[in-house]
Image (tube, rainbow, N blue to C red):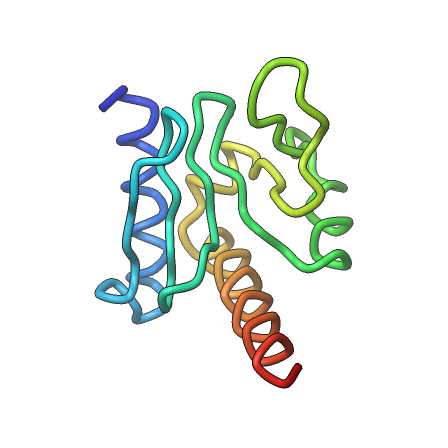
Length: 119
């Protein structure tokens, strides 16, 4: 595994531990990177471009206000993601702050699951 992906994985594991959920975090290989699942829901995509969190639209806008945040572009020439936002490196390295963003991602995934099960 590339060193950058390993570093991002450790940062995500630290954030999950900060939330008291280290055993609820899983990783699966995905398109040359890793997809992270928290509570069995996709929450983050670790790519060479950076670590991107899946967030609700309002949280996406808030994160995009931070220097270094951007929409994930999964592969060259692809459109920017509508759901995944690359988290600035400085935020990823601040475990408490990053854990807050991870919690927002998990809450969004949980609400999306509840909404789809009501249909």
